[in-house]
Each structure stands twice: as C-alpha cells, then as structure tokens.
Amino acid sequence: MTSVEAELIMQRADDLATHSQSSTGIDRQYLTPQHAAVNAMAARWMREAGMETWQDAAGNQCGRLQGNGRGLPVLLLGSHLDSVPGAGRYDGILGVLIAIATAARIEEGTLPFDLDVVAFGDEEGTRFGRTLLGSYALGGGWNPEWADELVDHDGVSLRDAALSFGLDPDGIGEAARERSSLIGYLEVHIEQGPVLEQEDRALAVVTSIAGARRMYITMHGDARHCATPWNLRRDSLVGAAEAISAIERIGKERNTPVTVGHIRVEPDAVNVIPGLTEFSLDIRDADDESRDATLAVILDEIERLAAERSLTVDVRHTHEASATHCAPRLMHAIAAGIRSTGDETPRELFSVAGHDAMAVAEATDVAMLFVRCKGGISHSADESVRTDDVGVALDAFHAAVLALAAP
Ligand code: GLV
Ligand code: MN
Ligand code: MN
Image 1 (cartoon, rainbow, N blue to C red):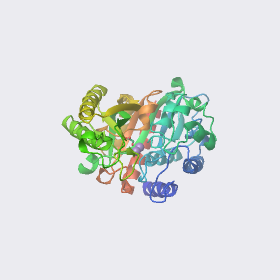
Image 2 (image 1 turned 30 degrees about the vertical axis):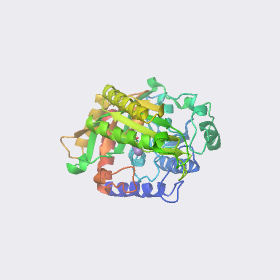
Image 3 (image 1 turned 45 degrees about the horizontal axis):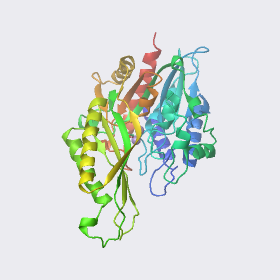
Image 4 (image 1 turned 120 degrees about the horizontal axis):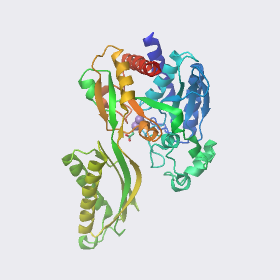
C-alpha cells in the first residue's frame, strides 16, 4: 500500500504549499498567519494518525502516539514547516509528513515508548536572522533575550510576533524537553545535494551535519554626491563587492561552503555613493576548527580590502552551531530501515545543509535519513522528489522506528 500513502504525502505537500505570505512563490516564516495555518493542517493529520496534539510554547506543532504504558520515554520524529522565500515543497515538509505517516502505521499502545512528531516552526531563520528557533526552544537552547533582541526586516520584534501568534514571549523556553525523558530524535530530509541521484540510490544515512556560522558584515564609507571625484570617494558598495568576491575565492580555495545571500545599501539612491553596505555571510564546514580558520582568513582579507578604500567594518554574529555527529545507535536503526527496503549497503552522507537535528542534539541523540531530490536542487521552486522514493523513505523510516522498539 506504499504508493497510496506516498501519494497522500505528495498531496499534503501540495496542500501545505498553498499557504504562503508571498503571491509569487512559497514563503512561510516563523510566527506568521501562514505558520498558524500549516500548524492547524499538521495537527489535523496528526489526529487522523491517532495522535493527541498540542502546540508547544515556541509554536512547534506536536503530536503524540501513546506507547504501551504510562510515563514512558519519548522518541521524537520531526522536521520543519517554515520555508525560505521562493521555496520548494519538500525541504523540511517531507520530513514532517513522513513522520506523521509513520505514526499512522503504528497502533496506539504498542510501542515501548511514546512517539512524538514535531513540526518545527523555524529552521530556516529567514525572518529573524537567527536560525533554528523552534528546534532550539525544544532542545533547551532558547535564549530569553532573543524576544527583544531579534527583530524582523519590517522592524517587528520577536516579542510582538510571538504575542500576535498567541504565545507568551517570556515563556518560549518552556518548550524545552527534559533530556531524561527522551530516547532520541530521527529526521527525514531531502538530500539537498546531487550524490544520491548521481549514484542512482533513493536513501542515505546521515553521519554528521556541518557546523555553521552566520553573520552580517557592514562596510561604512561616506554617502556623497555622485559628482565626488575618485580620490575623495569612500564607496562602501564597491568595497563590499570586492569583499564578496574574496569570500568566494577563499571558500573555494579552502573547500569551505560560503554564501552571501543578502545585501543592503544606504541610502539606496541612483545618484548617491553608498555610504553603508551590509551583507550576510553563511559559512559551514565538517568541523568547527576548519570553518573558523577559514572565517579568520576571510575577515582578515575584508579588513585589508576595506583599509585600501578607507572603509570601516563591523561584524554582527547572529548564529553559531557546532558540527553535529549523529549517534551510532540511531544511525544503525536508520541503516537497518534502509536495508529493509532492499538496499543492502546503505550509503552514508555528510550534510552541508543545516537541520533541526542540530538544535535538538542539545537535548538528545539524533540521526537522519536523506531522500534523493532531483538535481540536488533545494531552496528553489524547482525542488522535486519522486513519489516512489517517498514510499521507500516511509518504509525505511517506519522500519527504523520499529528497530528502536525491538527488545
Ligand atoms: C537550512 O536549510 C540551511 O542549511 O541553512
Ligand atoms: Mn532549508
Ligand atoms: Mn530543511
């Protein structure tokens, strides 16, 4: 019956995609009306799967399938329902939908643990600059200062956004789960890379997730009339252009993924030399030391380039997550799940992309199952998965949960 379930998952992904804050593509950010709408849909599907549901203090939608007793420890399954602007239909979403479909296959009262599915409200971090807010809250990594410190592009503070969503902005940390109550966390996610497609495989076990840092770098010069002669100009945008090219060069030389995905100039007028240019930097690597060594080289080079143009530089760090290593016992369960689908030698992959599992790892062991996606394309409307792969992923994930339930 796999194909019927896989088709239902694909249909649900299409239904979730209708909730967007943009009319030109999928864009669903934390603590928005669209977030509330998809939580309500996920809650309905969780109840249909036999779970009791609640929204936690951080706006994560949760469902629980009771195990075979009272006061049992909890196995968490999940991923996220928020998206980047111009997103596809499967990043995060597929993991939530496969987790719900897994719970739907299991009868209440049969597992030796409670099975919780969590649909996280913020993994992408596109609204408040700081990422993994929903999963940090559950993992116990919430910082109460974020309520006032974090402000979106429209000047709305996280405090006000939480209030409009119906949450207590000073109580978000209460979403934290007790380490002693948890068995572990399993997450399905599209690969967001081309390896599985190149190797003609549907699934992989994730070994570890890259440690990431994000920051905003601001270059300050002078906003002046465009009649200003060359020798008197302090053009922050040209300085930033050189800095961004240097970031790419250094990232390539050191084989470190670096991305500048945001740029803003002031005063942003055609006939004024930009006095201020702000751009983002996302840098990640398999280990934190090499990532930080590359970052040091980049920041030194930006300082050197800025000095040549008499610009000054500020760096505002917004996110730092250490590389996360998946727990061998949970990886074994995922690998057993993949083997149960006929793939005798499960592929292991390292994840450059960040995942909720990184933040949940503060509270419990984690592991992940990757699913092939077309062309490795993600963070794009062109994201695509095969329905038969979704069915195989569901079988493997279900088998992984049963492997953990086995005595
Ligand atoms: C999330 O998709 C990330 O890798 O930044
Ligand atoms: Mn993403
Ligand atoms: Mn994701």
